[in-house]
Length: 269
Image 1 (spheres, rainbow, N blue to C red):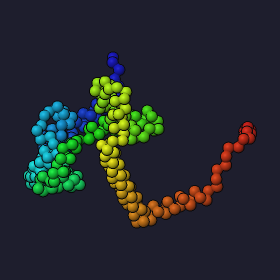
Image 2 (cartoon, one colour; image 1 turned 30 degrees about the vertical axis):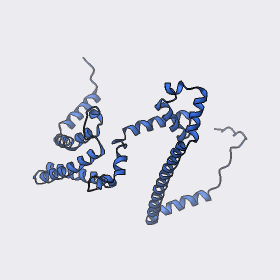
Image 3 (cartoon, one colour; image 1 turned 180 degrees about the vertical axis):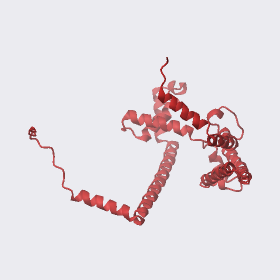
Image 4 (cartoon, rainbow, N blue to C red; image 1 turned 90 degrees about the vertical axis):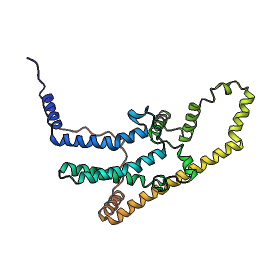
């Protein structure tokens, strides 16, 4: 007679009961409708997951803006139609669409590009948006590489140096024939041009300006978070009191003595 694992049977029964539950089936139906209405079309226009190799002429920031402009009213109409039905499932379905629309509008509201009613915006913004990626997939890949390099270097190499190494490693200029065929004197001239020419100084100036702006944004964000925490402490007496008591206790406690050089006496039982 075969051995039967009692725990495997219990797990199977639990999965069977879960999958065959009526609410699970209804929620799956709702998810399928939401996926066909907003999730999969958005994935297709962004070109992610199974749609990364599917060409789409609207795969641009303008195309994404037009996508949301057309899709949000459609979701709102879908919510109104579902809310008029009498069943609890339909009302929950409508509520889900309401929450989706609210979440999307809240995220788009922080980007002037999406809130511009004229649809075009200024020429400079339009030109810059052409170079901005639609997703953060490339950023995730680069951050993974950066995290790995920092671990390998033990934190002794600056992010600026690692960035330069990444550029040199990926552009292939130093290993290209156009550079390798140069004489040592010509390579030195090209090196000096990259270090001290007017073009190099302009690039460095733009980099410094960008770095200062990022640092200013980070400082402002840090101050806002600190201010919010301080406000919370002022309006939450128990938090402020707890902090004061903890600091006061640390000051009043006697300092720990260092380890004694004398050997402890053996315990006598």
